[in-house]
Length: 419
Image 1 (cartoon, rainbow, N blue to C red):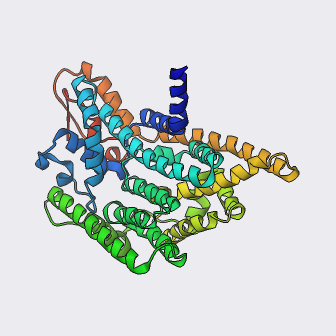
Image 2 (cartoon, helix red, strand yellow):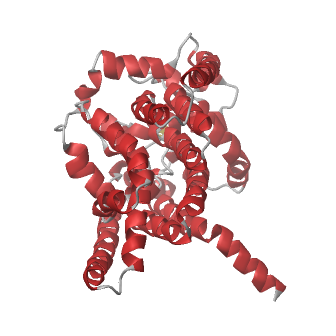
Image 3 (spheres, rainbow, N blue to C red):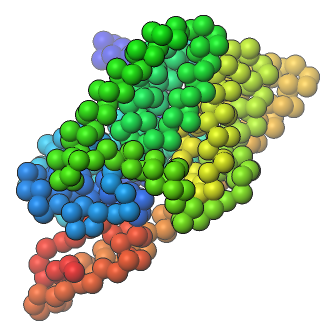
C-alpha cells in the first residue's frame, strides 16, 4: 500500500510531465537529425562537448554564418548533458546518440518551464482547465516537436514560459525580467511580446512605471553584460549577437532574402497548423472567461506586430502557443461542464470530433517531418556500408546535405573523413 500510495502521488505530481515528455522523446528518437536553422547551436554543443577549451577547433570560426549567435544556450545544454554524453562515448555508441541526449536535455529544460506555467494555470483556473491544456498540447505537433530542437526561438521560448507563469502568479516584474533576458540574449524579436505585455501591466496598474523602468534597465544591463562577456570570448571579437541579428533583420530588413509570406500568413496558415482544434477554441475562450482577454490580447498583438515582417516562419511565433492553448482549455472545460445541456451537447460532440481530427493531423505531420532529413539518412546508410571499405575514404558534404540532416554529430570515425 505505501508503495502504491507513493506511485499515485508521483503520477499526480508528474503524470502530465511524463505524457508530454514521452511524446517529445518519441519525436527525438524517431527524427534525431536537424535542419540548417538549428546548425549553429548543434555545432556549438558538439564543439563544447568534444573540443571543450580548444576554441580554435570550433566550427563557428570556420563557418560563422550570416550573423553571430550566442553560445549561452549551447553552454547550458552541454553542461547538463555532459555526464550522459561521457557515458555514451565511453560505451562506444555513435556520436548521433549524443545529439539525441543533448536534445532530450533541452526538451527537459523547456518542458520544465512549461510545467511552471501549467501549475499556475491549475492554481488560477482549476485542475480541469489544466487537464485540457495538457490534452490540447499533446494533440499538437509543433510545440512538442520543436521543444527539443536547439533553435534560438526555443531557447527564448523557455524564458517566455517562465514569464507567462510569473504573470499568472502576479510576479509582474519577474515576468518582465524573463522577457528582457529572452530579448537581449536569445531572440531580439521577443521585444514584440515584451512591449504589449509591459503596456498592459502599466494600463492595469499592475506595475509602477518608474519602478518598472529601473527594474528593466537593471535586468537589461546584466543580460547585455552576460552575453557580451561570453560571446566576445567565443567569437574572438567584441560582439553582442542579438543586436547584430536585430540590425540585420529589422534595420537592414535582410530577413526577406530567405523568402516572404503575405501579411495574414500567421493567422491563416501558421496558427491553424500549430494549434489545430485549439485555434477555434482559443477564440471561444476569450468570450467565456473575462480573465482570458487580458491574457490573450498582448499575445495576439505580438503576432500582429510580427506579421508586418515579410519573412515568416511558424517557429517565430511559437511563444504564442501556450497562452492560446490556455484560452482554448478554458473553452474546452466550459463545453465539457455543460455537455448535458441542449446546444452544448452538440458543441461537445463537435469538439470531440475536432480532437480526433487534430490527432490525425499530428500523425500525418510527424510522418512528413520524419522523412524531411534525407541527408542524415544518407550518411547513416554510408556508415552502414563502411565494413566493405578497404582503406581511408573522403566524404564531401555539400550545401544541401548540410542543410537537410547532417551535422558533426552524424560523423563517424575511420574509414571516413569529411571535407
